[in-house]
Image (cartoon, rainbow over all chains, first blue to last red; front, side, top):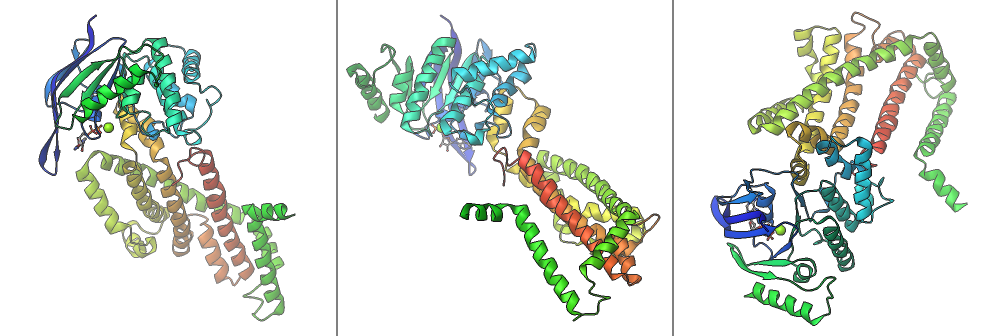
Length: 251
Length: 264
Ligand SMILES: Nc1ncnc2c1ncn2[C@@H]1O[C@H](COP(=O)(O)OP(=O)(O)O)[C@@H](O)[C@H]1O
Ligand SMILES: [Mg+2]
């Protein structure tokens, strides 16, 4: 199968206090359609920077990123980002309007009634039916993240970029959202790049895990994760996989 | 019983009314005791009957409407200027420096202090009063809009771009609603200053070319030694102030920023 996304030798540095700080150093990897890929690595190693480049929010210094054989030049509804921050929803819009808003801009060929149905459908998929008319400040952190995921998926992006979306949630909510995400991924056959520093989370979710080291980083290793789904966190295979990655991160 | 008592105290409007009644009673006691000359400290019923007279013959209503129309025109003009200036500042840093310099110079100047200059430049007509209103409203409005634009989380803009909005779309769908709390704050401060400014300016300029406003009304009442009428005018000024500040802005906030959890 051909790759949906090709990242070839990209490097990125920032200017900080008039000094150049290298963050990414010749990073390369490919992402296949339908794949669930996780990126793990210590805090500050450049995971968000990398995802931001794929999203088209920043320009890279060297190398190139091809999405469906075309170089990425800027953000696009084809590649939707879900952030860690709870304030990624617009507080002046209800849950339904937050999900509907991108559809109203991009999917004008669909009739308004059908757009509303679509938005409701995705809210149902993240188990938020009944909360359509709530405002974001009336929701818990987990519900806000579920809304953000519904908003992203309703656009049917070709690739979903997730930057530690569950990083600020308590462990129980986080586990619940991981299950919801896996179900969604299977149901709509999404392609997902999921950044996290929680190794267990990466093992629960993904088919393949990229390990990054301290910056300036290239990729330490890429680990294939073939454990049967649904995954049992207490199984020997799972624990061994976590340990394998943990050792790679610590190296 | 205890709950009822709390409810009573919690209702802002009832509490407000309660204290107005108490103050009215104190006023009346002082007036009846005749410690002060009744012509300068009239009884409440005298004030009210004078006010009712002024209302029924229509004068005070026309003058109130006139003052309000001046404010409305001034605020509308200030609004347009503020949006243009703060919008350009959001785009260009050089321009922002210019606007900030203007604010530093003009904001501390009370409108009334500009009067002699305005008379010299514009004369004493409506234009002069509207100029003072614009001056009172403009600077607090710009300051708040600038703060508002700066306080918008960067993530909103990112999301706008991600979901395919162009620059105009980002301004229309994101920057404007996101800055609304600051916009309302600026309007509130601007209104309060404009209302005071228009009354003062009208007292100075009189009824230039028309019936004059509320400020002119109370000024005339003093000249003709109509103290009850003077107090009647003051009551209307206070009443309008309360109507706008406590009811209009309160409602506006309730259906927007407080509902959205965006109060600042
Ligand atoms: N806009 C920026 N300007 C300067 N330095 C930045 C910027 N964004 C990120 N960095 C630096 O790049 C490094 C990687 O950051 P980031 O990608 O956020 O890491 P991670 O997401 O893995 O925690 C950090 O040292 C951070 O300080
Ligand atoms: Mg990060």
